[in-house]
Length: 300
Image 1: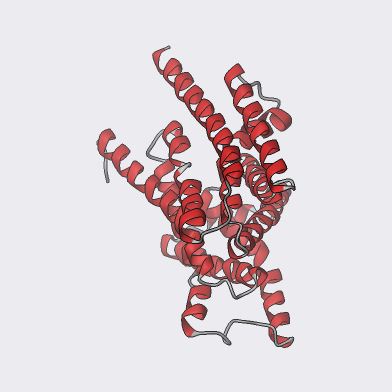
Image 2: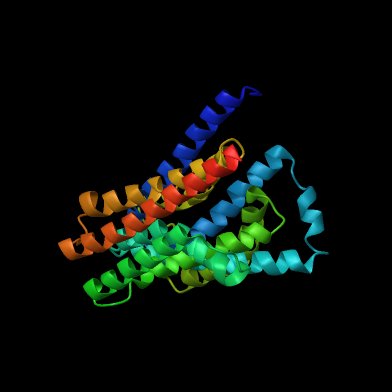
């Protein structure tokens, strides 16, 4: 056990970077399965995540939290909602990657911190500082600019940003830990996912067991690919400051953006680049304001 604060912080930083790098590289994993429909990949992700998470719970002998759920309607309602929202988020993300919209998907996670703040204002009635309002206004201009450039609302980015924002907001008020919450969400999604895969098999439309061996393996390992970054993140969150996590979170969409533009050669004209720059300026203002306020609190 590490007691030295500096060593604890350094280890937390390594865990945090590892989590966000893994999330940033996850599109490579889904791209390897791009000839399999996103809805089937999603079902396998849910089922194998359930199995892997419950193996972790078994190793840790961590079952007491399950006893509280049947008697707490509030917990059931919160995590039914988060499971549904997470399912939507995962589906859109996998579909976007495998349909050639990774760059737009990365935009969703760039603007997510600003969406979180906006949801705090609308739902939790939080008050924003002047620079936060300026950041949101600039980001909104960026989204409007991209809407004109795309010729449509960037719905993939907005759906990912708002679904993940709502997910985070609900998880914030939920009483379960990260591991417990995700395990319960996968429990709620298990039966629908299993039934749908059985339906696909009966209809002769299932890919699992009918594709290359390595692709079957990737479907099975989807649970590990999902859970490991989350476990690294949970370990990091206990060891480093929230401000540090706030900066590290840009690693993931940055890697996704670079993969989309330079590896998968997605269409990214100059006009679209201007829209991204506008949003990056908003994020810079937002991050600098956050760091400044954190320092003021420490000095007070």
